[in-house]
Figure 1 (tube, helix red, strand yellow):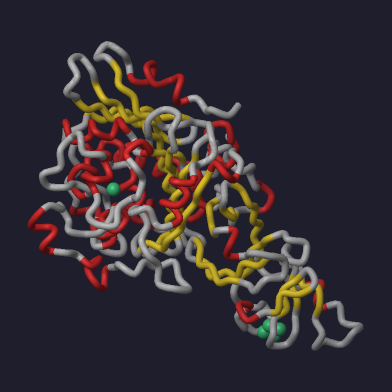
Figure 2 (cartoon, rainbow, N blue to C red; figure 1 turned 180 degrees about the vertical axis):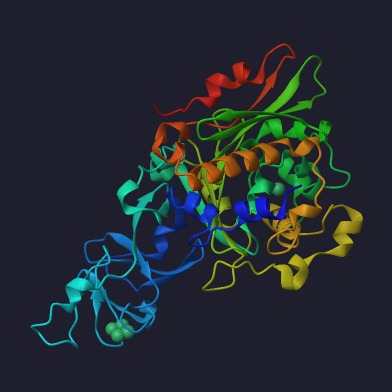
Length: 438
Ligand code: FES
Ligand SMILES: [Fe+2]
């Protein structure tokens, strides 16, 4: 349970808020490269951390974000003409480059130097990991991009998707580090442990991967619905070890996941297979962007995986054309199928992402955490909140967070392993937690 003051500290990320100041120390995933496909392509609206921005790729191919409103008299630069290294406002022709400088002011006398005095808010962007990243913080302290493993692999090793989620970023992230929910909200009534995981969790559609491409260790999820969570602070965030009993004598199933500031959840799979990161980024206080990155450091993604991921793969919903908003949403109760729910699906809702959205979005736009009752299974959520509050309060007192300038702290992998009861999970999993790429 949080006090209202703590809740605001964690959930509000608009300009000038303490939480917003912390978020603005990090590079954040903002867009997919395909949204700005070529030099001088049409500018794109983007809301990020409560700011209305316009993204564009200039003639040289570099990308940037500027404020939506022209600093002359406020026309939206969405209608701007993207031409010759700058975005020109269509109202009176003022033109801005990626740094925010006004480089042309054709409705003022030629001898005027007014344009040298006018700037538009502008933020830098970089492309890495199959995403466009943005940095909305103080210009003088822009950190390096984090060395997340998916930022370092070649493009054929990776697949990225993006949707808009209709709730505050924090409750979305809390679902990603809440290990005990999976066998419930994603569960299949009558599922057996030897049924492939995605057979147990899906209804219809499905991930489309043949059995040999599925995570073989996921069969151990349903043996134990009350995993024991062990949490350790690390430089970038926290490492979580989730321990489950198995049907093998003297053997535990461990899922070792990580949360890295501000909102990257690295989710384990069998060593050597494709793994996953969920990145949650505030769009504003009541909506968030959800980037899901799947990658394999050891080999390119197989055609079977790519085909499944591109088709939605059961994990990703169909989108309303021209938006990142899913067709199955709150307004239509995520197209719940009550017959399926009666007969074999815990939720009756199609596929994993919709199931997660149904339980997190319907908490309300910003869940009132003064009403919650946290149990032992919420240990990682408690630790993550403490860390974010500590870093936010420290920044309010002038102490910069260390993590943005520790790109190496992001070189860590999640893993699922079987260990004997005597082995500490960090020791047992260490060889797999270290990055595959040096
Ligand atoms: S409002 Fe943009 S140039 Fe006048
Ligand atoms: Fe989930």
